[in-house]
Image (spheres, helix red, strand yellow):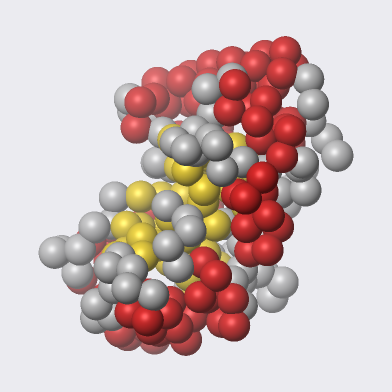
Length: 238
Ligand SMILES: *Cc1c(COP(=O)(O)O)cnc(C)c1O
C-alpha cells in the first residue's frame, strides 16, 4: 500500500472534516478519525500509522486479533471494534479494543460484562449501536418510531447497571444512498436520541456520536459526529 497516497487521502479528509465542522460552528479538534482497516493487510495499517493514524477500526474479531499480533510493535495504535460481535466472541473482545462501537443487544452487553469480570478487566468502554433507519439488514437497537423508545430506554437502563461496562455514547450506520444529503435525517435522529438519553440518564457519559463513513462523513460531522469511521476514502476502493 502506497504511503504517499494514504497521506494525500488523509490530508484531503481532514480538510473536508475541518470545513464541515466549521460550517456547523464546531471545533474540528472534536472529531476523531478512525481509519477502517477491515480487509486491509497489516502493511496497509503500518503505512497509515506512518502517516500519523493512531485509531483503527476492524469489523471482525479474529481478523482484528491477527492484525493486532502482526502489529504488536505499534504500541500506541488504538484498536476499535466497529462490527457486530457474536456473543461467543465476547471474551476475545474484552481487553483488546479501546472502544467497542457495536454493542447492539442487552445479551451482548451482559456477556461482555461477565467476560470482563472473569478476565479481571475492570472496564470495557462501549457505544450502543442504534438502527435509526429500520433497515432489517442492520444491527443495532431499533429506534425508529416513538413506540420504540420505551423498550430502548429499558435496555439502556439495564446496560448502564452492568458494573464493568462503561457507555460513552451512540453509534449508527446510515443507509447507503447516492446523495449523502439523504443521510442527514438519520444522523439528526441519532443526535436527538443522544439528547434524550442525556435527559433520562444525566449522570452518564453520552459525549460520543460515532457516525459517518466515506460517503457521508461531512453530513455526519455537520450533525455532531465526534467519531467518523472511514475506510475507502483513506485506503482506496478494494
Ligand atoms: C466498513 C465500515 C466503515 C467504513 O466504510 P467506508 O465506506 O469504507 O468508509 C465504517 N463503519 C463500519 C461499521 C464498517 O463496517
